[in-house]
Image 1 (cartoon, helix red, strand yellow):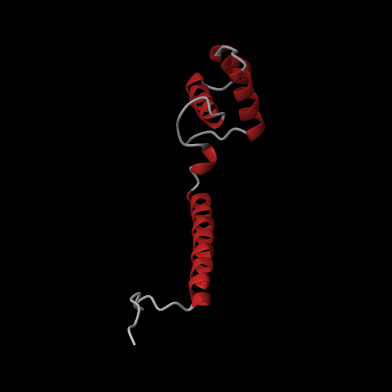
Image 2 (image 1 turned 45 degrees about the vertical axis):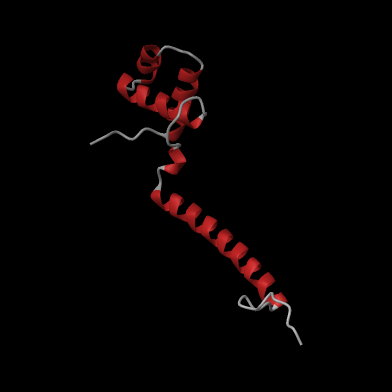
Length: 102
């Protein structure tokens, strides 16, 4: 079963690694395996925008679903506003553009 480390410990380790402190020194001083620290550093670089990848807050499916719902609701509002504009003019979409000859 994987060990869960406190968020403060992870934050401290990431700050030290991003400050170019060698990983083996951080691992020895905090008592965390170097493989765990390599994973944390990779994700910290992604979150900092210094490496491509999925941001840590985007991996949560519920958070992704909520963001998508907000996007879709905004699109729906725009569509409703556009629809209201067309209803105000009451233009017949199949109306003739030809001039009638009397």
